[in-house]
Amino acid sequence: MTPDVESRLRERQTKSLRADNRRLALRTLIEYWVRERTPRIKDESLSKRAHLHERGITNFFHITSERNLASIKAVGAILCQREILRRRITCAISSSTKGSRLDDAMCGTDAFVHLFFHPNQPMFFNAGKATKDLIVIEIPIDALEWSLTLFSNQNAGSSRVLIGPDMVDLARVDFDLFQRGYWQDDFERQKWQAEVLVHNSVPWSPLFKLHSFMDICARHDANVPREVRRNYLEQQLRKQAVFE
Image 1 (cartoon, helix red, strand yellow):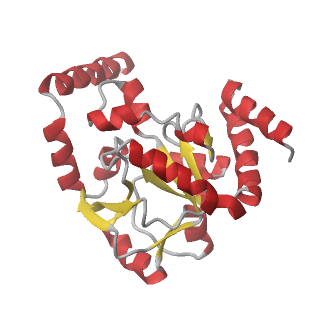
Image 2 (spheres, one colour; image 1 turned 90 degrees about the horizontal axis):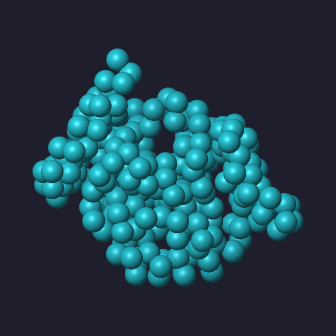
């Protein structure tokens, strides 16, 4: 693939109105990045680490079930969904829904471990209905053995997401939102779900820290102003009334 073809695929990912066309363009791009970018990752990662440190990001976060910890440690790594299926590893329910896992498989992001910039995620509450043993694995960015790493400006399964391995892709992430510590509306909620996608696996390290679902939620709620929480709840109730 030439740089010109890559540029046209990026443009299609940005401009296409059809979700399936966007995902097809993204899948083709991801396959190209895996082939062409992987050998240069260590050199490219230094400037990105510095960029993250400058914006107060020193850790990434992965959400999973506590029941998966034994297999993660036995394997010695957090595996992507594609690798889990290839090895036929049985996993407890994760934070993602069945629909989002299908979206990941369609656009190729199932070949990546999904990490977040902030430990408290909106999807926490969807998964929490099915399981209360969710945990957050805190991963220091300096302890991460970077393989091919992509950055998304919102949830990687969204049909409107922009994803890529370059500094320009990392710059699309709204770091001011994370420094504030909470989202106020659905637009900010989408940006809050920006992701870091690490190809294939994240090797386990004793430097990783574990946090419970309930501790993360309690800590986050304590930082949200009461007025912001009330306004957001009213927005959701109005939206629900439209569909009833």
